[in-house]
Length: 206
Image (cartoon, rainbow, N blue to C red; front, side, top):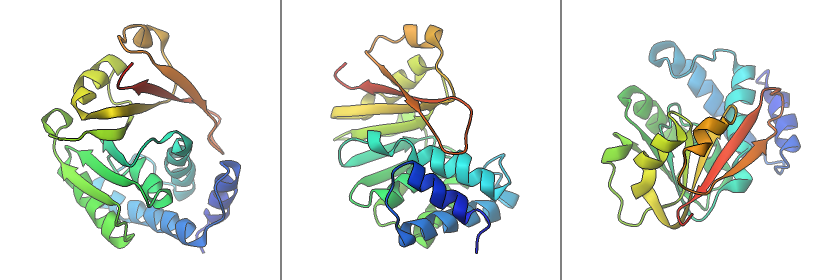
């Protein structure tokens, strides 16, 4: 029995997610995979599994209510965050996980196989080089650059009614003021995390 199982159960309840044993077991298996591969692949600086449960899994699932449409691309997915926890809870939605680090995409491919996620796939490459004909309804990323740069890099990925959801530890008004697009700042309450979390939401037509 994973020592962080109850922490996850309580956190999922706090997020208003239904009690689902299969999904819970997949989240636990995902944490165990990260911990196993972390030793060789340095996927994340977080080593403690209970911290992974809060800072990776629950943090990712906190944005679940804000997903839009039927397709999602996760830019700079790293260890598969937030996409893999989201894919577990949204089996009807198609997820593409993109990263330029080949070690991380190899891990994510293995995680998708072991977790039997039929709605998720991986692409190794740079976001600016990725081609899409239809675009994506939701674009997610953990803010890896300024919001202005993120919009420049992802502009070609939006579907007609697509949205960008950028996860940030805190909002910076100076950075947001440089945006040409309309944006919404959504405060997130993540169970077991006291630090400020927010989501910057930008619509393709804004």
